[in-house]
Length: 427
Image (cartoon, rainbow, N blue to C red; front, side):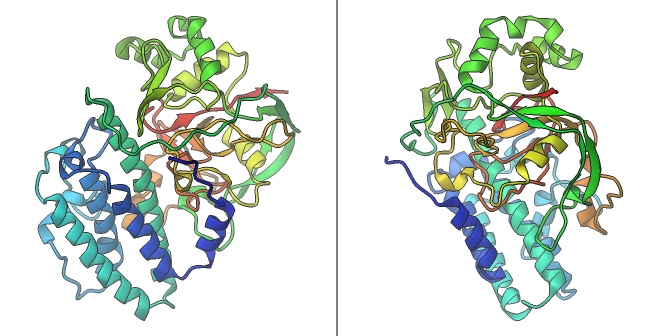
């Protein structure tokens, strides 16, 4: 296949200009389109407790619109009342839910029945959007649902990648595009002065509640690497005994290394020459950003390199100068981190796309944060414990889904997402 060129700034700009109804159609259509190469058998598999079957993602995102949008009408009757229990994820205030660890046991409803469910809910949603376009509350709920759907588009891809990686046949989800002909230039440092800055979301554009309120915070004098750490650089860490040196690791991280026998990033081969991707097993590109590493691995590498991970305030302040988040996103079609093609430049590179970047910041609330009222208050706030913030989006994140203020979060041992990092240091 030939390299795909996508003007991603145009993708983001067009998303801002479209109507809510067309926005709904575009995002909803993208999810089943991602499944076009899958067979029904593929959609049932749950490869680990943290992942979900493709079929569940398709149903849950539809349940979200039925539960939080269509059910605002007191006369609405759910299409399948007994499915509400199956596809509620974690909204305790709504009612009980099927155990997350047992989603892979749901052979019924069938894949075809779930696609029919999506179509019927979409028809009702389109009717509603055409008759109630001026409803401000409806608009916010639909935008939340669409951004929620895009989160699950990314999860669908990372979860099916993990499932396929456990199959000895190493199935191909999609044939690879021709890789970018770029290279990881010598790492440079971008200096940041000590000062008070404002971070967090403000304005009328959509953002999740955990991105607000905008507030002031103090930055110490610091520097941030101009690009993410590459596969070649992480290979040097492995060769230097990084996974065998306990003094580089946090105690919980070292315990995890020992318990899980970690010796390299997830999906890398034993000889460090190849990795499993959504295009099957391919040669490891030394210039591409390293991915599928945990917070513990990122932090250990930083210690080994005599550096640290950036704080989320440092990262956001650096990224805030970008007019549009431009990078290797889902829309590019690669579905894998790519080498940098910009060459030497004073500007930061690959801040957006390719890999979610671990920061040294715990996922906690901003000052004066208040979760939204009602059941949707469970969306983010109750997870602000024991997780760490990642920034920037990945190669399977939709291009119009992220922004400089976007806060992703995972547990420090997680690594099945497209997770990488860049270095920071005190200055």
